[in-house]
Image (cartoon, rainbow, N blue to C red; front, side, top):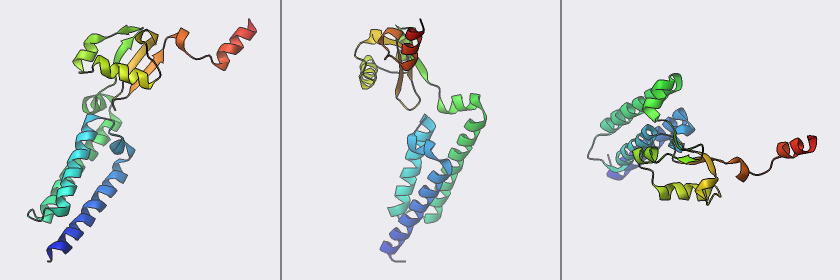
Length: 166
């Protein structure tokens, strides 16, 4: 077979496999919501990319490799959907780094989360002073969820209604 034609066919096959697999797994794969999905995405992308242009390795071996990693990823996803314990082991759990206004430095150290990363995450939430934070959680996808202390929260309609009832 002509080398250029083989590369075209391999590229189309790799694209179709990756597209179908992404549709099967869903948005979790795209969002990289956990370590195993991040690794899975990188491996599938690497295998698919190599499949497209590396004609030294047989197409059947690439398809076998894509199939195996796809089955592993799908199995882990299904297991994590049906078992909270398995999901925690496979995907991890969110980490509380500020609780009741207290910075949990040991947790930050255990998960290699620096003060500068914390400050950056807080600034992204419009918080420039650590003492404004009641509770902060480092989510699995690396984002920071924050609850401000009561006196720093915005006034809500419920707050105003409770004042008018008094």
